[in-house]
Amino acid sequence: MISVETANEIMDALEEAHVELVVFLPESRLKPLYSMLLEDKRFEVVTVPHEGTGAAICAGSFIGGRRAVLIMENSGIRTAAESLARIGLERQIPVTMIMAYRGDMGEENWWGVNHGITMEPMLKALRIPYTIVRDQKMVKPSIQQAILHAETSMYHTCVVIGRPVIS
Image (cartoon, rainbow, N blue to C red):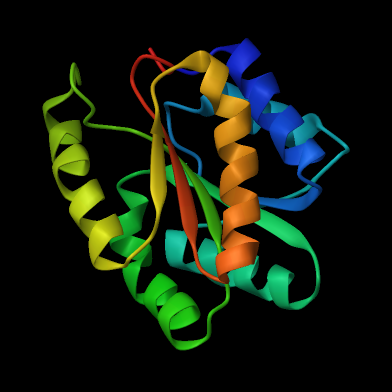
């Protein structure tokens, strides 16, 4: 599970990058972050029942001139693929994603392994540039760089928080 320190770093990175809207589908690895976001007045927070819905909300926010991020477990890339393809490949509307890396080396749950096996091929198939963060010091700069790159490239980006950062 993510530490409170890392959750604070993520929230500080979002604030420094002028993110106004945080959309998330709750999952266990980032649980402390979700609780903190819901209590924090710096961001408008929307919870969604499906990752594709979250991508669409973030895209709408971008069209409306507001920065947004979608936070989810990496398994969500499979369920959001259609929405992300339409939004990004057809319309060049960027969505920045932050994902917990379920299935990273050392995964303790048998059902989580497939998330790791499929994540990178899915990101590559969708042509989404991504960074896997395995060093605590890189959390904040990786998020800030992904947000900047999404707007520069007018395409999605993804920051995956790996196992060394999420125990």
